[in-house]
Length: 118
Image (cartoon, rainbow, N blue to C red; front, side, top):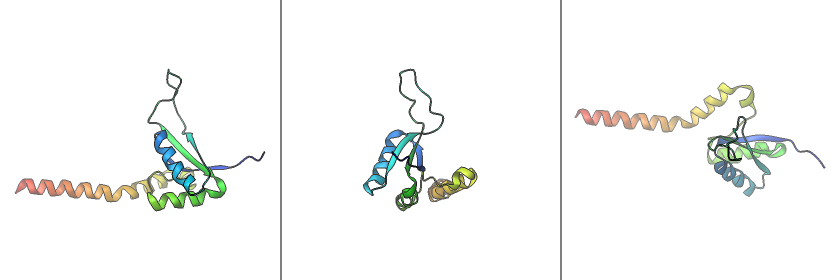
C-alpha cells in the first residue's frame, strides 16, 4: 500500500464548515480529508470541544488545484504552503480579504455619525 502525502488547503472553525469545504472539493474530484487542528481539547464526554480549528487536507498532487478552487469562491480560510514559514504573511493575506468589509463598516459608521449631527 502506498502512503500519500497530504497538504493543508483550508483551515477554519468548526467541523461542519470543514466538511462543507471538503465536500465542495470532492465535487471537483479532489481527494480530501478533514482533520482536527492542533491543540484540540478532549471534553469529559469523550468528544472534542467544539469551535476549535479544523483543517481540510488535499492529496499533495491536487493541493494547488484545491486552493485555486477555493480562492475562486472565497479566499477566507485558504492555507498556502508559505503560511507555515511566514505566519505574518498569512495574517496579512487574511486581512486583505476582509478589507472591503471593514471599509464598508467604517463608512456606515461615519455616515450614521454625520447624519446624527444634522
